[in-house]
Length: 251
Image (cartoon, rainbow, N blue to C red):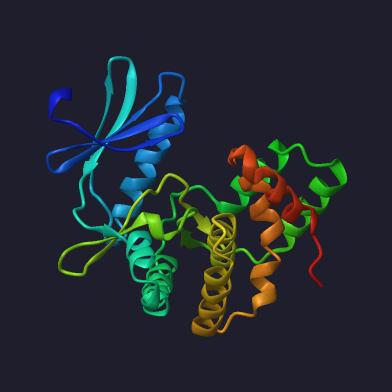
């Protein structure tokens, strides 16, 4: 693929995302795990099969020694930008956001990794005190076992609305199958980390209202998802995440 026709869309840790015509190329650093790149592409292909509106995977390639994922480009505006530009429509946008997440949770992708296994592994990777790790593993083990499709990074930056109003969900790198409340706890935490406390509370209240879920049930997941997030989290977020992870008992 010729680099001269590329436009940089985003620069992330360990990767650069380019637009090339009607496609997107996510190019990973040379030291990025080959297994992780292939797993991300496979996740995308698995989720594509559910029928959700997501960018179509085109191929996976190696270019100048770097692995890359080549996907369809979705023209539109992120929900994040719409929320920032039209704060008076926050409630309307949150309604759309939660409805989309519910649509995700209604799907099944039985070949995806299990959320519980991923969380178990992440807790082991943290530098938390052994007692806290044990309590987190125990809390995780006691959670109801579900098989719902979970995005793992569901936030307004990963929702693109096209010109005709069709929403697309991007970035399935962290997709698993498991308990939807863990996915909700993750989204709540992402709003909190972004300093959007008001939106975080409105979001969790709306989700609980729409699903008849008790808020304390989602709160029980918070220390677990915070511990998992702390492994890949930015240094400036780690202190807050570890504080959340230390509060194991909400009862």
